Structure formats: C-alpha cells, structure tokens
Length: 300
Image (cartoon, rainbow, N blue to C red; front, top):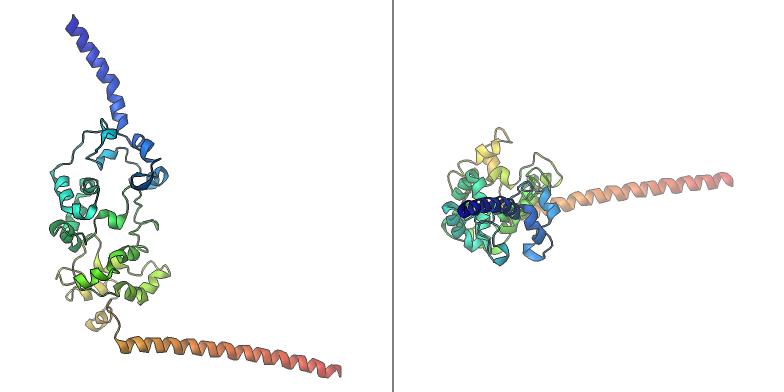
C-alpha cells in the first residue's frame, strides 16, 4: 500500500514540476533578468522581438552551455560534437561565448559548410586565426539580427559595404594579406560606389561580385573575381564585357597621372560652372540696372 502511495505521489509531483521546468527555459523567463541588466548581458526585449530570431522561445537552442548558479535547473542541454568542435576552433575569435556562436550551425548547417570553405572560414576554423569574421562580426548580435531585406540589417545591399569595411579598412589587415589599403575608399569613389550611395538597387556592393559566405581569395581560381572569372562576373551586369573592360575595374590606388588628371577635370568642371553662374548673375544685375536707369530717364 505504501509503495502504491509513493508511486502516485511521485507521479503527481512530476506533473506539477514538469510545466514549471519547461517554463523556466523559455525566452520570457530569461528576459525577466537579462532585460533589466546592463552591459553585454543585457538583451533589449523590444529589439529581440523584432529580430528574425524573435519567434524563438527557447534560448537554450543557442546557449547550450549555461554556467553559474543562477542558471541551475534552466536547462541540461549540452553542445553536440559539431558545435563543440566549432566552438573550440573559433574560440580565439569569438571571445567569451564561443558555444553560443557556434550553435548557429544547428540551424544553418548548409551556410556553415559554405563559410568553412571560404577564405574567411579557412582563416578562423582551419588556421585558428582571429583575423577572419565569425557570424556575429557581419550579422551582429543574434538577438537583433534583421532580415537581409531590411535596411537596418548590417548585411543589407546598401549597408554591407560598411560592414566589410570594418576589417578591410584596417591597415594591419591590408599589410598582412596584401590587399590595397584604399580598397574601400576606391570602391566608394568608383561609379559603382557612387551609384550605391544614391540608393540605386542595381549598383553592385561587395557581395555582388565577391560573394557572401563563400568569399574566396582573388588568387583562388574558383573566386568570381579571379583573373579567369572576372569577365563572367562583370558580364552578369555588363553584357559583352571584355578583358580591357574588366581591367579598368580595380580597388587598387589610382596611378598618380590618373589621380591628378581626375582632380584637374573636377577643378576645371567646377570652374566652368562657377564662371557660368557669375556670368549669369552679372548679366541679371546689368539688366536690372539698365531698367532702373531707363525709368529714371523717363521721369526727367
């Protein structure tokens, strides 16, 4: 009889405890604390709800290795081998929470495989270097990631140039990997860059030519901007592109002659416009003065 009562008591206790354990791991519970905290551990509930991950109700899908007494009982989830191996590989780059960043692979496995084969992924995962970007370097905090179509997204067509520039404008990066120190400046000065700046949807950004998760070194034969593939890449927008055409498109610093010629043309153009404006103003002034003098002559 006593055994039967114990079994019933245990069953009822389990029924009562299970819902509370489930509730303890949901986003609302986590935000109850993290929504009011300050610093890196703070999560803005409103921004999170508007992000692409705002509909996810289980924080432990990413936070697979909760630490500290305050998290006891919330979840017993642990990273699998894929996540654990990736976390170890990106630890030099990711900083404090490599497991949470590596957990992206659980939902984005195809993207991860593409990234792993890229020049960025090879740097971070294979070479264990802190030079290449991990997911959050480009997309931002997983709590606030916006759809690529949103202009608030850091990888939107019109904002991705600035995102790439965070690394590619760094002098030590350009010196270490041999790309131009003026790569971003030259792009922004180019016809493509100026067209993008005024909001033209057809203007190419970095990802349009170089790719995104699959970025390869320009020396890699499979890269869309390698010498062998440049014509094909340019031809996506410029049908009939030739070797001479693609040779003119470069992020390298301008030759001094071309640089000073461009400046001279700008100065000449502005001078002509200034001369025309001054000439028109003087002509208007002369016309007004002549009319006033004519009126004065009539009164006399």
